[in-house]
Amino acid sequence: MTEAWGPDDDKPRRFAGPVKVRVPAKINLHLGVGPVRPDGFHELNTVYHAISLFDELTARPGDTLTLTMEGEGTGELELDDSNLIIRAARALAQKARVPAHARLHLRKTIPLAGGLAGGSADAAATLLACDLLWGTGYGKDELAEIGAELGSDIPFLLQGGTALGTGHGEAVSPILARPTTWHWVVAIAEGGLSTPEVYRELDRLRGSTWSPEPLESPGQLMAALRQRRPEVLGAALANDLQPAALSLRPALAEVLKAGYDAGALAGIVSGSGPTCVFLTSDAAHADKVAVGLRDSGVCRDAVAARGPMPGARAV
Ligand code: ATP
Image (cartoon, rainbow, N blue to C red; front, side, top):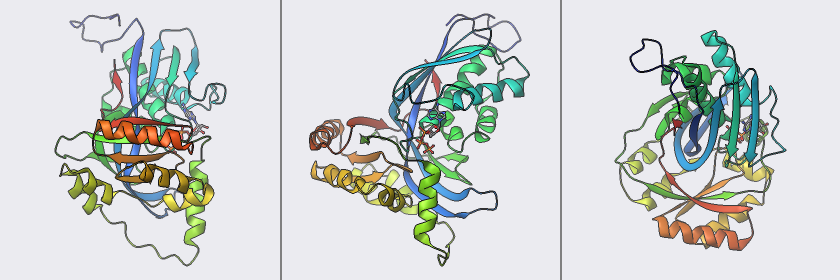
């Protein structure tokens, strides 16, 4: 990175050279879904956890706003104004009253529509990269505010770690747990699932007679995070969207079974799916479970990942 302004200037730092930002995927260790609110969002109580599956966004100076990409979803993902990257860059430029000029390039590893919040991750990376490129000098909280307008998971992906999400997921507070690395296996599915469709399926399954209870704080999971025992954490994982994802994609039951057959301590659908994540006891165990899942042929790929990871960071 090349600095256009030196540290002695009083203007915010701006970078003349490329700014590269790495951003993690998220999984939900707990996903409690309440009723639909008047604004159309479901009330959520969730525990986010950032894992070591990363997208990378590079921002370079340009005369217009352009986006190119490589990796997962290339040829499938629109690179026009509907892309969350373009929307995030424009939202920041508008707020800061600067021209939205940048050449953006995405290296994508997080699968599309996988329940891993890849789009939100890319938007978080864009906010940080363009903030540095344009020298707009916003803090994480201000970027999170801009991000929350675009997607509920964006504030968490700027922050990373393990955090409690409330509201519709956009209100994030970090969970201070004992520093522990958890070892996961991510089973990547062929094709995605639409998040709004999964929520609609949940509402359908609950039916009109469903009477919502107030969302409980995930006490068991919080207690498990304070210990270093993966089997305790495994028993506390929960996802209210899982029955809806399984109803739309019954084959996910085979993925979950294959993970257990391969020796995983616990398995769960990640967010709205169709990605499934499995908890293991250590790195070697994760590699073994990943091999077992790949050999079973029930998923497109299976990769080991660690968490928690920091949120979007310049590298
Ligand atoms: P979430 O769990 O946050 O709802 P997801 O992980 O299931 O999301 P994403 O990959 O974040 O799914 O994307 C959902 C949809 O958002 C995609 O199908 C795509 O149409 C749209 N989208 C817009 N920009 C992006 C982007 N940069 N990366 C991925 N998807 C994007």
